[in-house]
Image (cartoon, rainbow, N blue to C red):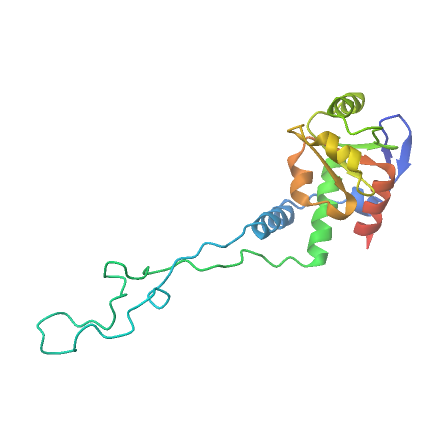
Length: 201
């Protein structure tokens, strides 16, 4: 199949990658897993064994008339531990490579069908200026956009930092959440070829 570039030329691409059926369930699973993996999971509270003190039984088991107690750090006591204390945990979900690649193919194919994928020959700036980035995006007709280049481009990255709805990434750092979250995906021809090679396997 062929994709139209912004300048009017067409570029041949692999139909397996850019013409796949949209699998909403799989895309949802992969996006959810990606976002879950970004959670820190560092919340922690102290249970009765982690609270300082309480090593000695406060009074003997029988004969005092008081309720039996084994430690002064019981959750029932003031300054005691938390009953169901939160502990550090990982929110990561297992997604194998085959599922991830299939989801990415599905996303790219849907972007093509919705005409949200814009292919340009190159996307460079002479200097890292926000004004230059705005003018460049106006040329291709995109304001809420993810710009994907073949490799890290510092000028583009610096120029996009003040633009709320614009992000820049290289192919190696491309992720499903960014693809789904932007109105337009502006991809250079070199980056498109790299994406095709990665997802065709």
